[in-house]
Image 1 (cartoon, rainbow, N blue to C red):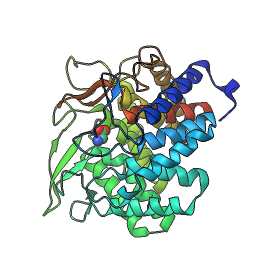
Image 2 (cartoon, rainbow, N blue to C red; image 1 turned 45 degrees about the vertical axis):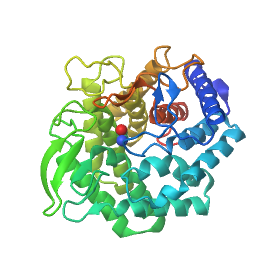
Image 3 (cartoon, rainbow, N blue to C red; image 1 turned 135 degrees about the horizontal axis):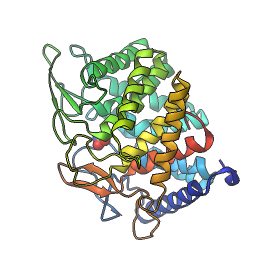
Length: 370
Ligand code: GLY
């Protein structure tokens, strides 16, 4: 995307700011793959809780390359993708989709490199080993008893690996995971629970729990956005209408419960939330809405989703959110990582910055994918 004349000025400014911030990050902290900032500076040690963010910087560099055409960004994107390659056999996290789709997945998609294809397949096979036969879900890093809503944004890696390797067993694992998530973590009003606790022996669902939301029975905004984007991808891999209608219901819930400016709080149910904005959830939502606008069979919905994405992106590109000052190292302000733990609160996050760029690319090109 080099034709800058066709890019609206607000997006041109956002791309320029993003390119500066990413350039600073790779020059000031070589080979650091950060998760979130502290007082606007990238935190130098890895996030303590779980290692799930290491693919987003490489992914943001691929997107910055796509948006600017700068070859040095492509070289950096390849380099940061290579840095995480050994994680393709990491059995300890459920987050391999977050690591490998923005990096090696994008690499394969853009360049058709057979080695990148093989890395994606291997990472998907690793993630699929978390499948619990009794409960029929990919378990979270917490253990066999735990199903996270976030995994909806990782399961596309298993679908992708299934498609690339023509492995029906992998496809069925991914599909079953989506069905189980839909059955237990998506409620009748299309709100979502963060975590389901199961009896691993019988596979029986026991109760809800939250990690980053307000209450066990509440609706944590970012998890909800992972789900609505993820169910849309599940629909695209399977063609099953039940996944599309789930994605639409979740998207509509976002629109019904989010203030006019388009940015949700950390949890929609928390009365008087201590921070008004969780901008990373909004960036994920904007990208999700732009994909869903292409998939829905309802032209009114398509219009609403497209306009909602544009509105969210306009808010995120404003001075309140876009960190134009040099002292702040992230791109988007006002994101929240883990509010109950008080970690990464009202800061920048590398995934928020990644999905902001992804949404801008989709908005400029009117495409469901980069
Ligand atoms: N671990 C995924 C998230 O915090 O959204």
